[in-house]
Length: 315
Image (cartoon, rainbow, N blue to C red):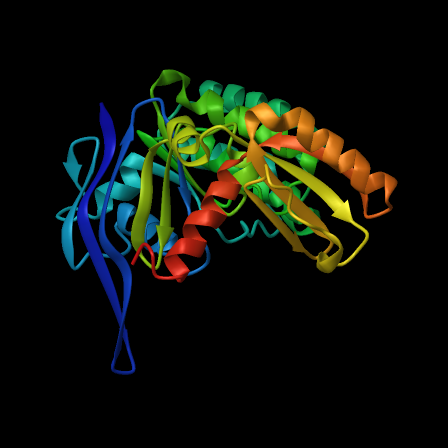
C-alpha cells in the first residue's frame, strides 16, 4: 500500500522575471515498509519535493497524498503525518541530544516511558550515549547530525523523510545509521532518504528515483534497475601511475576511462579472469598500483544516466 503518492507534480519558481522549473511532471510512489532513495545532484529538485510533502510549498499542478490525505488542500497535515530530518544541521544551543529527542517525542504524542525507552534505544544503536547529556554547542557536526535523525525517528509518523542523513557522520556510525534507518520500516513506516551518497545508500534502499533538472529519469526497484542497466557487466578499478596515452583498451573490454589517476575498465562478467590477468600485467609494467574487481554500482548507473541527460539523450 502506498503511503506517499505524488501524481504529475509540477513546481515553478519565479525570480527577477525568470522562471525555474524545479519539478517537472513528477510522479512518485512510496510504499509501507519501504526505504525509498531520492537521488540527484544539487538543484535537481529533491528538496522542493520534500518541502511540498511537508506543506511548506504548494505545487503549481498535480496532487500529493500522504496516507490517503490530500496535503495540497490541507498542507498542515504533511508535517503531522511525516517526521523529518532536514538537510541543515540541527542547532541545539545549550540543549542536549537527550533533551531535544525526548521533547520531540512528547510533542509527537508518545508518553514519557515510551519516549525514554525509544531515546535510549536509538542512542544505543548509533553509539552516541556518551554525548547524550552534552550541550549541543559543544558537539561535533556528526553527533548533531545523528541527533537530528533521533529527533525524526523517536516518534516516526506514517513516513520519515531524511534529507542527507549521513552528512558529517563518521564511517563507523554511518553503518549504524543505515541499520537504524532499515529498522524504522519494521512496523510499516515508509522512509524517504534524500542523498548524494548513492554508493553507501545502495545496500539500504528498496526503490529509487533519480532526478535531473526537476524530471524523473528512472524510477523503480533498485536491484532490477541496476541489473537492467548494467546487465552482466563488472568493472576493474585501479590506481594509475601513468598517463592515458600509456593504456590501450583491450579488445574484450567495453570501455576504459582514466580520470584523476583512477582507471576504470568495464567488461562482461565471464571475462573476470581475463581482466585480472590484464591488471596484473599493467602492474608488472609499473602502470598501475593496487586494483580490484567489483560489481557495477548504483552510483555508476547514476553517473551514466546523468551523463546521457547532459548530452541530450534523456531530454
